[in-house]
Image (cartoon, rainbow, N blue to C red):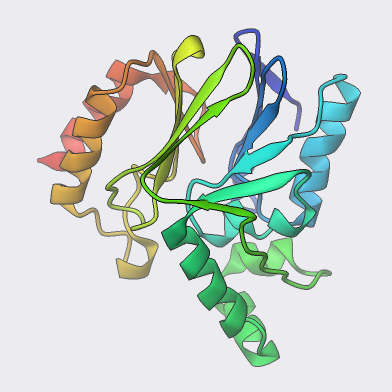
Length: 229
């Protein structure tokens, strides 16, 4: 899987459906580099960093987490620099770490999730906690780039975080537009409409989702309107 470039300062490793690995992104500021999401495993993170090294790009100083689900966070223990998450994400990861301290729980998880079983066929699961926790919104000056990291309502998870980069016209949504995997992937229409209002109010041209290629803001809102009823 090869690193892609979007604009002059945004680099992304595409999602990998075979293991349900999400897109990983690097934003290269003049002073700091910010990654979006920490990947499904140490192997996922190392693949991303190898691509950055080959391209002569810096490894991240900071990594913003869009939500707590395994494919976006189980590589956090190998993240370069500091990890940044909202308070709710930290709480949910603490619960996951406590649960997965039991080997029986790890075995049950692998049996119930084929992608986790494939990703961790020869590795143990490590759940790390974020280094920096915020409430509401965090503004990061990367040098020539501003990353606005904000919590948002979403049908996918109650710890959803978006990353808006106004200078690049970009909005990173993780899996915010998906249904709830713990409720049969049901899409709560009220929370979906709230998310749509948030997207509509953000000045961006391109939206990046965890498990899709980049798409235009209008295209995304049009698709979400069909789900909202």
